[in-house]
Amino acid sequence: MLIPKTLISTALTTVASATSYTNTSSAYRTIVTSVILTGQSGTTTSRKVTLYKNGTSAGNERINIDIDPTGIVYPKTVTIDTPIVLTTTDVIYAKQDAGADVNIEVSGTEEDIT
Image (cartoon, rainbow, N blue to C red):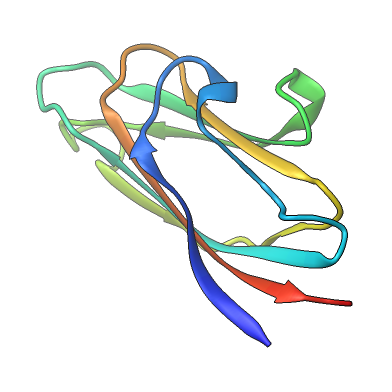
């Protein structure tokens, strides 16, 4: 049975390991179904948000996107509907390049596969 879940709901920081979700165990499969990113301050500069899988090095980057809290240059809110599958103890991480003014909401489904 698939169980809908909120996997992450927080403000991002510049430290990827501070915002993460780990699949429950090898008995479960989690599918990230959507990621919503929203810039919170209209007076800051554009931010680059990075999503990683199974580590926080350049080789683990899965998505890089620019967010503009003013909504002038880039969108203020971005929805990403690209599925990311997590098995065993896979982990997703997220960070922004500076500040702490982008909120992230990650939703998905969890399934017991035993």
